[in-house]
Image (cartoon, rainbow over all chains, first blue to last red; front, top):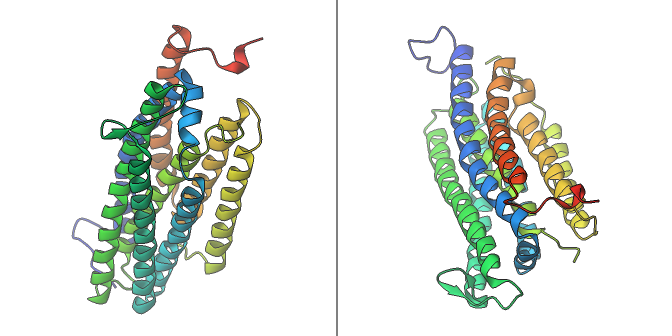
Amino acid sequence: MGTIAHQFDSAEQQQEAATLGMWVFLATEVLFFGAMFLGYSVYRSAYPAAFGEASRHLDILLGSINTAVLLCSSLTMAMAVHAAQLGSRRLCIGFLCGTMGLGAVFLGIKFYEYVEKYREGLIPAIHFEFHGADPQHAAIFYVFYFIMTGMHALHMVIGISLMGVLAWITRKGRISAGYYTPVEMGGLYWHFVDIVWVFLFPLLYLVDRSQ
Amino acid sequence: MSETIVPRKTYVTVWAALLLLLLSTIAVSYIHLGWLNPVAAVGIAAMKAAIIILYFMHVRYSPRLVWVFVGAGFFWVLILFAITFGDYLTRGYLPAPAIWQP
């Protein structure tokens, strides 16, 4: 059996406390991103046409591929937790590395998109030459785009580092069928970051595509 | 540990459903539905989020107390949106949504 800290009666109680604590943290994260989604919604309601035009300049193919990559990484993450629950460390490490790899692919594509946006002159305050009907308000869309995807990318970097630590402690033999809480909590974090992207993708890439 | 071990098949099914929903959200965005477009986009995203939370994040198999904690975060975002938009939409700061116009 795994380690039980002295303040807990049982491994189950310890695991439940960790899960609740993690969800409290995730609730603060929901509100952190929620505030940005709120700001986005207010400005999109105010300038729907400018937001639509600005959104159509984003690369829908790369955005869609990245969404699929993240959904696949959530599957490998769920499989890593599953392997940890069964106590198969090698499989768990393999799936954690797969998750890190897919996370890196996501960041690579995101970086390429940022470079493209720089080339096209769509980065407010740095290089902005928008030739649409309403460049002033299109700039607001790009500010939200870069801040929201940037904060999401930062969470991805943290997530990938976290997966590295989990793979390391699994290798060290600190994860077993009796104690896999760290892998499970890392999984919650990873899936949460995936959920943020699930909302970012349609709100940033799919505004007014039918025009 | 007493926690339920979800079979791998469930995870693969959930993953396939997520990819299907991704394709449907892209397809729907190219159909002109007016104010229903953003509603569909957020609705499909909410469905994806719900199945990730329930299956990948094991909330479906978790104690009810965890459900309360999960719900609290999203409920507070709802308050944030409701009060802010209650203000913006009723003071004429924003154009009235198309759905309100005759």
